[in-house]
Image 1 (cartoon, helix red, strand yellow):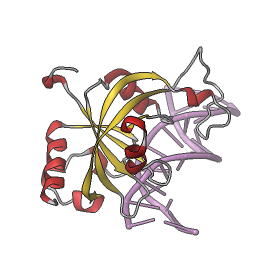
Image 2: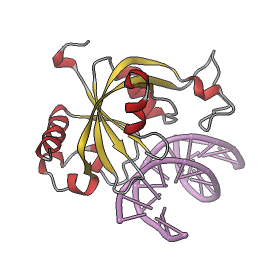
Image 3: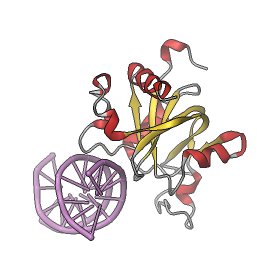
Image 4: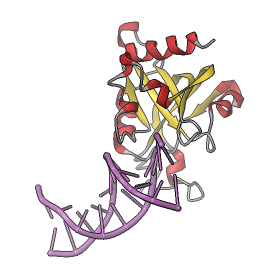
Length: 162
DNA sequence: GCCAACGTTGGC
DNA sequence: GCCAACGTTGGC
């Protein structure tokens, strides 16, 4: 685990109809590989900056309402995303191969599921989250950095709803 | 289902 | 290297 001072925080988006935090909870060891990211900026975060021990906010996009629903932790650092060269996979990339993986994934393990999801529109009214990437107009990154204070603010909000 | 925002592709 | 066309994301 990296030193506390270097621990980073992230937000990962997933459509719950595709993979929800409840699905993560049902995985063996509550751990899964985070495959299917097909955006270079998001890949670079996973490849270059995510470290084991980093903490993650789990976000449900396309949900009603869209919301942060819990936490997870990075348990394995970036490695090739084998789904990229699987023609039967919905995220198949014809240019990827074992010799040229192009895309990367990490492994994450469930932290906890919040008792109450924190809906996107409720986060918009929190002053401490004013600059959060998730709340930026047109923000589409599926892997995005979160500041330590933003992460802690979100945890406090989740705690206040217990 | 609409559409704004954004990333990627490819002609030039 | 520009930029129009196109595809995707994702809130609403």
